[in-house]
Image 1 (tube, rainbow, N blue to C red):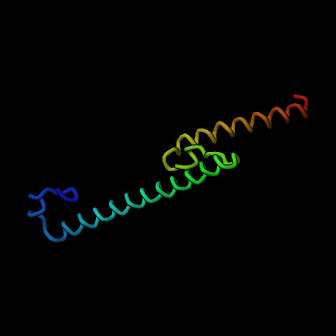
Image 2 (image 1 turned 90 degrees about the vertical axis):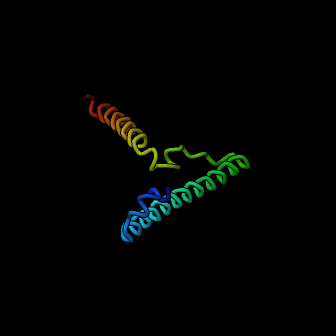
Image 3 (image 1 turned 60 degrees about the vertical axis):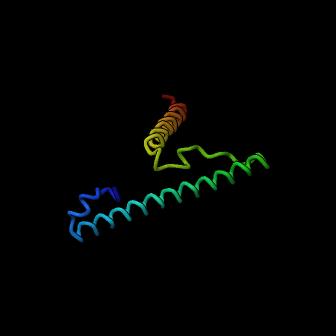
Length: 101
């Protein structure tokens, strides 16, 4: 099987079908390679942060949601919502203390 097409399907397909299949296969392969390149780049950055943290102790390791936001969008949104509620409650407490309510 090549590019999602069996040998029998290949021999029964016309040229346009094979060309479309190959185009989709190349697009999928390119997307996979780009995804891999992004992960490798992020990994190199994290290694640099870790080395810096080891050498001077000032660097903080970023949370995984920050490193891979596309994978943890729901968790990041939930965290933002919690922080917004916390900020609102703090604001309300300060406001109520000022107005006496």
